[in-house]
Image 1 (cartoon, helix red, strand yellow):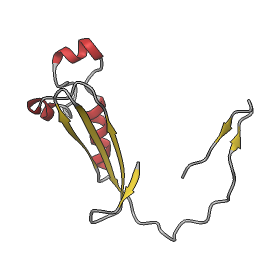
Image 2 (cartoon, one colour):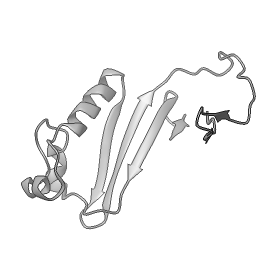
Image 3 (cartoon, one colour):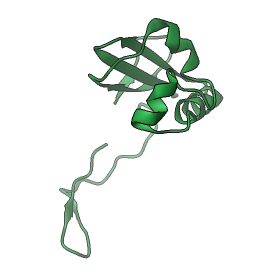
Image 4 (spheres, helix red, strand yellow):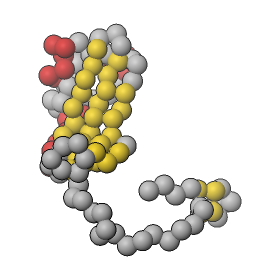
Length: 113
């Protein structure tokens, strides 16, 4: 997860990579279609309805961003979510400094921004 300023605007970027079975090039076009999976045998092996990526892309595009995929069959895939965000440098108030929070059960939480 990072803020990327390589393009024409500041963007929030999340990339998820795996070393799984990968996706054949001819199947990539089907990934973002509702109720569709790259290969019907995937449903039997891994489950799912074929809605997750379609919904994710629709939400990303409604916010001016996108979800893309790169994949090599037999090597894995990388999905990238990119959402534009306005530059907020100097516009946010300073956050109070602290070392963490403690839950009622005594578990310690760390704050990351």
